[in-house]
Image (cartoon, rainbow, N blue to C red; front, top):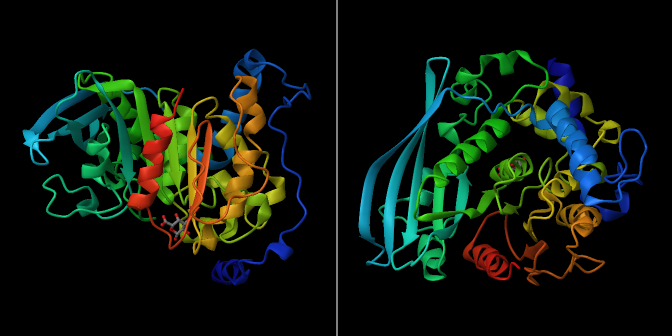
Length: 383
Ligand code: GTR
């Protein structure tokens, strides 16, 4: 095993565009039986379920939808937060199954003067909890609550560790205690799936909060959290918008380009993120029955914003752009014409128009006020 691990790690990650191998992407709009998908109906009834199943079986695992009960408890409220501009709510979302439960601590700021329910951005927080500090002693560009409130939207967040600790030895101490059978299955849920599951339970809550417009929820994630936001939006069509920031490999970037992080590497460093079947594709990208453009297609016709950062070649900015381009045909089935150009835009040229939005921000692997400003632009320019 040690030898195998060393061999896997020794495969150099490529950063040279000239060394990207020739590849053929699996066809989004052709059914398993070889039929061309020509209508929205055929997509929704035949091809979309096929693709969803392929992602479950080969990558992210099943998404259990049954639970015994769910309870929402308002733990803290401040009607005059952010200098009176917002209402702070901290809610515990507790989900029960098999006499076990998980608790999701949801932090929300809602515009104070809103005349009707507010559309909301909900972040799947994979970084330090102080990035989403409800007291606002700590303010971070990763979750710029003040800026989002000023633009008229609510902003919410929960932490991934409430669902599955991000650790290969302890990830099962969360949602997976409610669904222990998942751990036995080669296509069972793992950590990324558990985080996406948490986003759906937060959506269950939003549907019960009169302050929130549950038909206008954008699910947001950065990097590993951005892999989860994609999977959440693909699985749960209640999410109106998806934001995936620097999500890279097994996020919004095409695997077959083998540029930057690769499947063998991600499965070695983070064996708890994806299901057992995914390990078959280590150094074997071309055998995958899907590629990541198909995950984006599952989100159609809903707006999707994928970002990258210029110094974050690990997450393959070009491969992300190409994944979006290869999902365009599916959006077109719904009459949603992509406004993306043929080639990736220059650094710091945001293309924030729906349905498929993209930018490559100058700088490091991160999520910043620059990124959020553009997510807000996408929300504002939706039809
Ligand atoms: C890296 C990992 C990436 C990305 C990143 C992050 O180590 O290789 O896939 O998830 O972590 O979450 O910041």
